[in-house]
Image 1 (cartoon, rainbow, N blue to C red):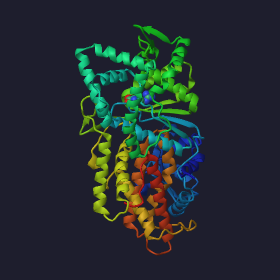
Image 2: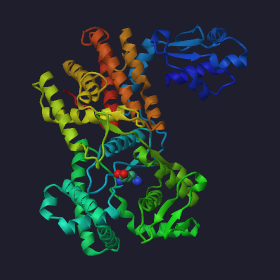
Image 3: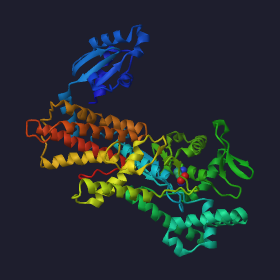
Image 4: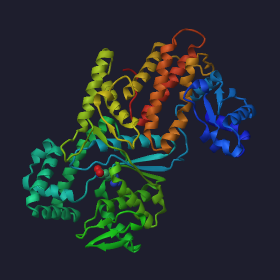
Length: 561
Ligand code: ARG
C-alpha cells in the first residue's frame, strides 16, 4: 500500500468535492518530519469554503477517520498525518524484502519504447553531448523497463551525408591507410579539417566532395568500400566507450540504413501534396506550425538528415510498433524534432504524438563550451580513464587490501561520471570538474556506492544470516527515516518515468544513502538483542534498493570498496 494514497483515502469522505487523485496531488511531505509524515495544506479550500485555513484544518483533523494512523492533528493551516512508525516500518521492510523487483510496476503493459540514444557521428570524436545522450538514454531504458515497458535502444549513427563525400575526396588526395589505422578518428578529423581549409581557396574541392557522395549514394564499389572502412574504424572506437560503460544497444541502424527507404518517404510526401519546390530543392512548408521550412531533397536529388529521420520514424513504428518513441538529443536540435513531428502529423500519422524529444543541456568544462571546431575537444575515453585513476587512488588510501581493486576502481570511476551526469536535471547545463565527481563524500555516485558497500560489509560481518521476515519491528526512531525512504521507492520510479528524468532516481539514491549513513552513525546494528534480525533486515533492504536505484542509472554497485 502506498502511504500517500492511504492519507488521500482517509481524506476523501471529508473532501467530497475532490477526487482521490486531486487530493493525492495536494498531500505534501513536510520538510521537518516532526510535523508528520504527510500534510494537507488547506489554503486552497479557503475561498470555496469561506473559512480561514486554520479553521478548516482544525475541522478536517477532527472529522477525518484516524484509523491506521498514529495521530492526525491540525497545526496552523495544515492537517498533519503521523503514520504508526513501528508497524508501518515493519510493513515496508517486509514489502521490500519479499520482492526482488521491489519498486517496479506494470504500468507499461510490455509496450515497446524505442529510445534513440548516443548516435555519434562517424569519423568524429564522440563528444560530451553524446555521452549525455548515452547515459540518459540508457537510464531511461532501465526506468521504462521498471515501469513495465520494453525498451529498444537504437544508436542512430551519423553515418551518411555529404560530409562523407568530402572525407573520401580528402582521403583520396592526402590519405594513408596506415595513418588511419594507427589513429582512426583523429586522422579522419585531420583530413576533414584540411579539406575545409583548402576548399576556402579552391571551391572545386566541394564539387569533388559532392560527386563522391553521389557515388556513394549510387552504390559505387570504391566509395562503398571506403565508407564501410571509415565506419568500422569509428565504431571500434565508440565500442570502447560503450564497453567501458557496459552499455549495449539493440540496433546500430544509423542514417545510412535508411538509404533505400528514402524514395518511399518522398513518394508519400508527394502523394499528400506536402512537397513544394524551392530553388530547385524540395521542401515542406511548416509556416502554419510556426516553424521554418524543412528541406527534404536537395536540387541534386540528395536527401537530408530530416529525410532520413522521417524514414527512421516510419520504420520504427512499423518494425517495433512503439507506444512511445524517444529521441535523447541535445537542446540545439529542438527545431529539428518539432519539424519532424509536424511533418509526420501532416502525413496523417497520429502516432507522431508519441514521439518525444528528450532534450538536455550542455556540459561545460571550466565554464567553457566544448566544440570540435574550437579544438576544445575533451576525449571521453580520457575523462573516464582519469576518473578511474582517481577512484583507484582513493581505494588505495581507504582499503588497500581490497581484492579486485581494478574492477572496483573501474566501477567507481565510470560510475562517478555517469552518476554526476544523471544527478543533474537533464535540461540544465552544468560544469564538469572531475575531482568533484569522484569524491567519496557529498552528492556523488561513489558516496551512494560506498553506502551500499558499507551495508554489504555489515551483512558479511553478521555472517549473512537468513532473515526472519516475521519479526521486523524496529523501535529505534532513527530507523524510521530509512524505512520511510525505502517506502517511497515505487512512487519515485513512477515519477522518474513520467518526467523522463533520471535525476529523480539519482537524488533519491543520495537521500536514501544519507538517511542510512545517519542511522548507522546512531545505532549499533550488530548488537545481539531482540531487534538484531530487524536491523539486519533494514540494512539488507537498503542495499537492495540502493543497488536497484544504481542499476536504473547504469551504475554498478560493488559489494566492497
Ligand atoms: N548524429 C546526430 C548528432 O550527433 C544525432 C542524431 C540524433 N538522432 C536522430 N534520430 N536524429 O548531432
